[in-house]
Image (tube, rainbow, N blue to C red; front, side):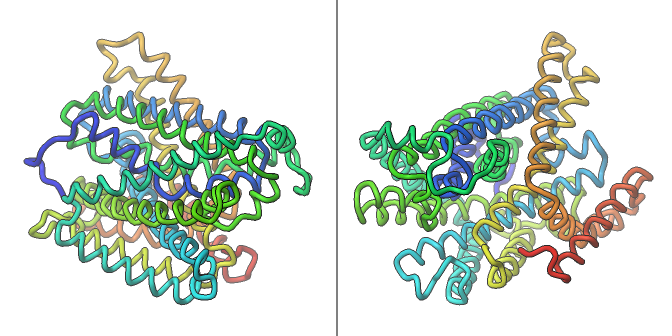
Length: 477
């Protein structure tokens, strides 16, 4: 993809990478997902919790970038440094797997968006035609990337505009049509919505907040290319603050435009449905075009991130060295091949899903939680040990508090996700461990420590329970 001899990334480029990674598909679906779960009051609480938790995690990334500048392979390298080789592998594999599932979600969203105009053909994005179109798109992008298309700055510029302009137009139109009475009526939960406690309302929104914050680590993934190591943490904070403002506005403003029950019933991407209800059909067309261009651009970016994760893990001997190979265009070709084969298989599997759209969104969120938890945990260990704090001892206590809050937040997210998704992730982790065994055999080193064997046993048992649940119908995707 990029060699060490290429130009280093500036603070602006790193910040743009964070914003570009975070503003993908999730933000276009926030109104409907939140509308189905809660009213404005619950949404505010959910964003307060998610914003605090993810801000703490962003501060952990910032601290680690400053205190451990020698660790430059991305998210999984922190897990390896703090918790050993197998946990580092699970972090890398989980992050890669979550990125693959996120790419599947992009194709389901594309199908769903096209289904707005051609419902008999594309349906909800998981019809046979939608799957065939998705597979064609996956492999068209695959061969373009192999030719080095990621170097085309023009494509990234167009995609960034396509992301931000529709969102800003949406926000402005809803500000102009703001109805206080409607907002007040929806505030604690609108009429016609099922009765449920405030705790349940907030819980039902938490996974979507994890999904839309994915990409907060975008600068860390490419930290080895930063001009200044300190820029990695700064870019993470700047990107986080800007994108959070956009997401909160996109979530809350629709409550002032129509009843919550109407928002909850809207077809995805719900941002298009809301704008259509406010300004007419052109609003849906405008947002839908923005969604398609934005999602295709985000897919390009995340395909590269997927390959970079495998490539970096292979370079640090946490994955088989097969995935460290690059072609003549400096693209990690083998990593890209495995990524797109897995994405294709998941896309095909959506045909049997009852709600492919939300299922892929939630699975993506849960797979990201383990890498985030391990990063936060490493932040705690580092602050407690004092390593890297020799000249800034006064920052140790603050960073330890930030890290503990991030740990608690990610654990709460696991609980909010529910056992179903945790077990399904374990089902995927078990065969993934083959790659770890493969890499360890190549290096002729010990496979597992005694503690790692316990972790492996827990993973296998959880995976077996999840597999049984799928086969028996107890767990349905």
